[in-house]
Length: 253
Image (tube, rainbow, N blue to C red; front, side, top):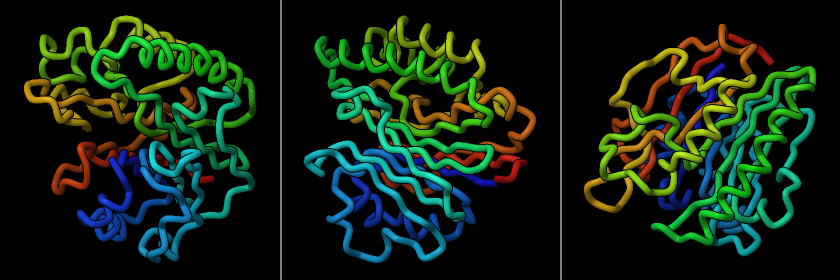
């Protein structure tokens, strides 16, 4: 089972850069796209609705920011949108496809511009709510693969230039501590299960001097650890500031 996650910086712009042409050659079972920057209604071209997939969207209220989509080759039993966090669902985005024993989620965590303290407080609160939610769903008799733009570089090995990233959102101590706690309590970073590469980045900010970050992650239930076969970051073409993350799992729906 192949799952591709991609943060688009605008899905129409990514399409113009060849993302869907590339995607058509990847034989993915799921495609999780974040940061659409448009509503589903705005997507009139059939390229956004590949015939091999069932496509589901969770738009921004204004259809201009955020937004996530999940493409499923097989028809899911149910689709869930949002996390029940009221206003915090509007700052981030989440959509989930449920199958008999597996749920695949697509997440876009809240973004912080520069060092905006109010936005950082909102982001921190989102993760304060998300942590208990993820521990609660562990009690369900199913596995979870939650992939997307988490807006956190989990460790020092996940940024190219530590000194340039210090004090910036996504590389704060409290954010990495949150991720450490998650990964110590029932979840794993799928990419790191098969790759220790310290030069593997998925995001290159517009600001000069920061270098690459790895903030686009597949976070999985620990029971899926043996199923992670291969993980790669595709950098052969540029579709946005983020690179697609491809993970192959030896598991069936």
